[in-house]
Length: 159
Figure 1 (cartoon, one colour):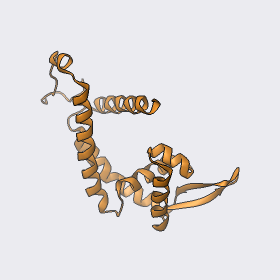
Figure 2 (cartoon, helix red, strand yellow):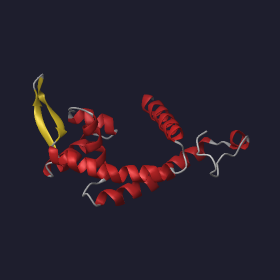
Figure 3 (cartoon, helix red, strand yellow):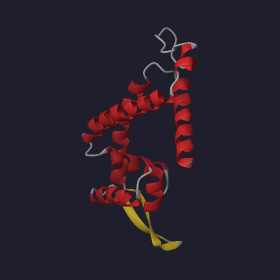
């Protein structure tokens, strides 16, 4: 069960399969993206943090060190866009750049202490938005949704 008991379910029973249209799914995902982007932009503004910069901090928090190219791939943005994000984070002293000892041409990025503090405090705002978005979904339902979206992202990246 994806929703908590005693709450209205959005289940349309058997009609879902007969009325399912992929273009409606794409529209729904797009609508969610626009609403979520707007809410994230509003919440993260309090930290002086546009969503692309938050995404970079999030990715850097999850890894030890990344190059600009790895960050661009992980964020699914052009290398030039990743470079602009890195410049902005560097100007705020939220990241540290250091030479890669195994490849002198590469520069490795990681969070500074200030960047880690900004990430951790802004993460709380993002979690609140995600919790509101998931609403009556159970923990398992939220994990299932995350897994399904990961599959969709993987499928589209593959082609």
